[in-house]
Amino acid sequence: MDKEKIIYHIRGLLKAIGEDPEREGLKETPERVAEMLAEVLEGTAYSNHDIAEMFGKTFSSPENGADEAIVMKDITVFSYCEHHMALMYDMTVNVGYIPRGKVLGLSKIARICDMAAKRLQLQERLGRDIAEIISEAAGTPDVGVKITGSHSCMTARGIKNPSSRTETRTYFGAFKTDSDLKKLLN
Image (cartoon, rainbow, N blue to C red; front, side, top):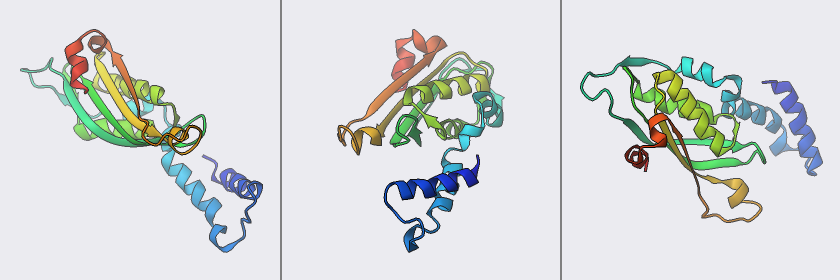
């Protein structure tokens, strides 16, 4: 990420909206915005494969119950809409997968969701990215992801509907056809 270019363009943006980037409250704003963007868009630097390798710590799955789904719910993430660069917030992710000989460390599931969200995103793509990463990291074709969230491009601008929530679901493998597996994500 080129922080110097971000600083330059944020100064220009401040001028374009009629602000004085040299006034007291704004003097360091371009630098703060560059730091913030480096943090909240960190996932941009990594492919799904990179993230799977980064957080792919697994353990042997127990022999009994090895084909039962593992589900983690209410993982909190936020992201930024690629259409408006507006905040997607109050987002929860539910992830389920069927282990095939190995299980992911629980914190790794949350870390995968967080890093995939740290990109300019669409909620639909975010669900697919998380499912792809979990599938690769856990070595299983059977993954389901449900995301529910609010989008400030809907709640704070445009239609200005503050109660609207968007729900997306992504299913791979057995989750596509097994209604009982789909129910686990609710």
